Length: 314
Image (cartoon, rainbow, N blue to C red; front, side, top):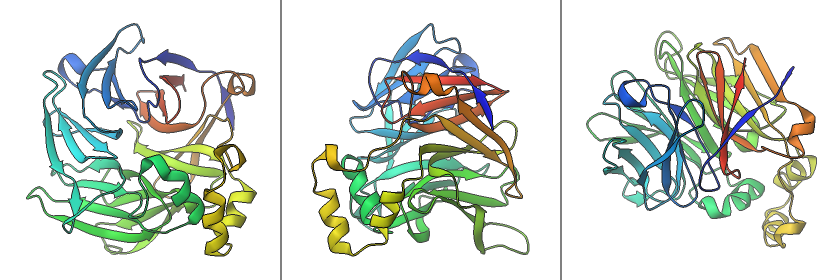
């Protein structure tokens, strides 16, 4: 494990959950994030300039750059959206699966042919009640595919809180973080293993949130909080007990630990990077990393709680 320090760049609102780096034109090198109030912000690479480019009217989570240079936004309330960062115009893509509105659209990855792979974390609970789904272990998370013709297909269901989504560099597999299982599930798309499912990595040291393929070709995985023995005992306990635990006052429920940690895996599931932040900084500053994006040797981070994004130099 390598211990690093962070550069933290504030944004005008809490919950800068994910990050993505602009790749062309005026957006090249800028970092985008979305916050609790529905805002999408563009942050200059040095953090000196922060501009609001749009408001979704919902709760933006995962962000991607689409083939047209627009932002694809996974909005927990509204589903998949496309945002023009020049004008702020918002296009609704889809908010339902099989005629039923999504409760918790979370993260996505876009293939070279325009196919969008995305996660719906739960069919029982929305983002405001994410802890209930996590503790009750509903296993209603899904990995879905949006084809260029608009068809939506559920590819994997029964996931323990489906979260981050990423495609391999060669697009021979797609993977989805299973937060409640501390795994990254992989679905093969080509070759002899097409249609098969296995694990890119398992028994992670904590609970993965968003994941993303970096410019280095690796799959980067956030560890939002270390493993919690109490949570895992609850998850395997009687349903009545799990439901009771989520009705306790928030102060009595298990809480995410203050940590900043991301890992990177190659296509064989080998751990290549394990980046942890200086422990002294963890107690006083940035924590609960839920978004990650490696770009040219810098690792950008988002947080479900913080009113800031951060960056680590490798």
